[in-house]
Length: 156
Image (cartoon, rainbow, N blue to C red):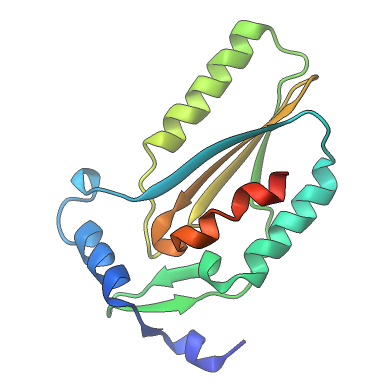
């Protein structure tokens, strides 16, 4: 890894303005830019996808970026742990499945990422008999809009 990443490097003006906005003042009341999307697949190999997704996150530096107190940003080393949260729904009643889905959705829709901590994303998978639903919640501070538009291609 490039050593300048380890010591921090300047943020773009746009990124710095966003970082100042959400760190200057009351955290709970500051606005956020987040990407939330749900994908549903009927045929899916979870193990292969998990390996591929972790490679994407570890290959793309901006998915491992954090803000430093001095207004610079730093790319952290590749993550060692699994970035997924798995929930198996196959054996549950429909009402329980809906309760779990609603709780996860509510948690993610109200999540306020801290730009100084990893991960800058949440990735949940809900496994049911007919399909697997993926819920991705991403701090837009960590990625640009054109890159976000490529994420659905991973699922197609």
